[in-house]
Image (cartoon, rainbow, N blue to C red):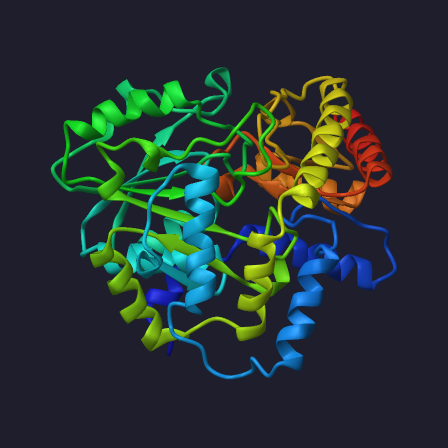
Length: 397
């Protein structure tokens, strides 16, 4: 009998973290592994943000902060939401957390009761369903297909709603597919939510600035559902601040107060130095952010061309984020050196151990036919990785 709780025994390991770990283990043996498994920009945090952190330390901002974050940071976030997203929030409706991941977990923990259903379009970020599980909710999946650029329709949403539905949870731009919902597509979903006033919407917008089709649209911009929206965002992707661990949610006051209450018992406020760096990031303009986005756009073109040339690999062109999510099912049942590859996990492990390219199985994201490939790496690494992937897949018989 395990001494551990059922809660932790029933929790799946994060596949993105697992694959990155396996890649590091091979690297430690002296093998040249190209890591395309992690959702982490390969750029450095802009210097002006690092300077603000150094200044904060010099000024002794080294003590506990309010649980929800420094007021100047929350005010800067509120101003950002108004300036960039046309969203009106008071600073006391914002809770700063240790990464957007904690903000998502906070929202689910304070909103769900046992048995409440959360509708999640697939493919989805690996932690969504596990967070729902921890909050004792039930995930209800809508399978989006590559033919529709991995986006669901209003009809599919309507069909998934039951009397137990409490929340709809999604990301746009999406991890792992890079799909972006247009204003028209969101408006169609909103019409469904208008008929179901008891459903809340958890909108993960962490990739908003890595968007190749124009300005980001938040579902919270639609007045008819804004008071049911929980907007989650952060600094990790746009400002290359993954290790700084800072994210936030903006929500109706009752929900933000509840998140503050929960966080006060779990972690309290996030790092004081990070918060001051966050103020500088929000007030420093988007020049560096756009430069990174433009670099990702160029890399997208390179990788799309190389992956599309691999016979048997089905690849669509993502509209945002920095991922490809190709269908590898045509390789299922093929073999190499007497070993048969039966699923996406087998393909992902084969690419790691043979091509020395770290990817993530699509099964982790709710799609058993695909793998996720991050293009948050240098152009040289991406060209070499695609060459290795092509050679490895071409060797399957």
